Amino acid sequence: MINRLIARIQQTGAPIVVGLDPMMKFIPPQIQEAAFALHGETLEGAAEAIWQYNKGIVDAVCDLIPAVKPQIAMYEQFGVPGVIAFKKTVDYCKEKGLVVIGDVKRGDIGSTSEAYAVGHLGRVQVGQNTCCGFDEDFVTVNPYLGSDGVKPFIKVCREEKKGIFVLVKTSNPSSGELQDKLVDGRPVYELVGEQVAAWGEECMGDSYSYVGAVVGATYPEQGRILRQIMPRAFILVPGYGAQGGRGADLVHFFNRDGLGAIINSSRGIIAAYQQEKYAGYGAANYADASRAAVLDMREDIARALASAGSGR
Image 1: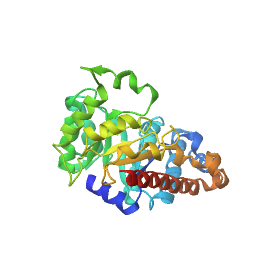
Image 2: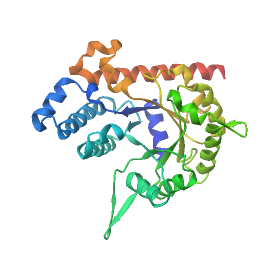
Image 3: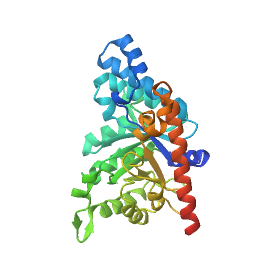
């Protein structure tokens, strides 16, 4: 799957992943009203609104981007109907040819971690049949329970040719409370990065590993260090746009081949119509605003990479 992700990035010229993180405040009134007319102001109504909202955005941007990243908590808050909307979104995105990164941040030990890995990336045995659960292409994994929590995912990645992105240096402001702590004179995030590189050697695609890393755009200097520590790991970079990251901050996340990173923007794209820059589209044309935001993001990143390349 890492080879397919790279091929899609090269085809689109856009190392971009759109975070499908729906919140009711983002969903235009006309979509909410139609969903509530069918199901009432219920969990089912909310899930229908989320599904229709996602579908509109995916239809508008699927030819521009290689991948999407639905954040499962935004669906789980609506209970079982929300989880059904998550699965419908995953399936629809795959029908559209998109790589799906499930932002699930799972991490446990033993049989629990195995069950998470099988449920999201693999196949579960049901009688004489094997069935896929959520069937994403990649998922995010929390490594802070150690190898016991990560290796079941790596096993499934080998079997299914799928991938994971391990949390290394996250974009949130308080990440340093733990991730920047020094151990033997080095920050924890560097030690985790070294472990990611080691895990990745067990699970290689053609040029990059199926084991990637999450490193926030809001920490460009740490990104530069981690790029060197993990030369063959793809880096998923959250924090662009709404959290303050911009194209000029991102160049150190990429290798000299122009690959090695994929940049996430969530509400900066899916709620673009609520921003002053794209307000002219209005709620009725929210998906067109999302498309315009993707085009602007692609240009920003391309300009930054071209400028960096000329100076390398």
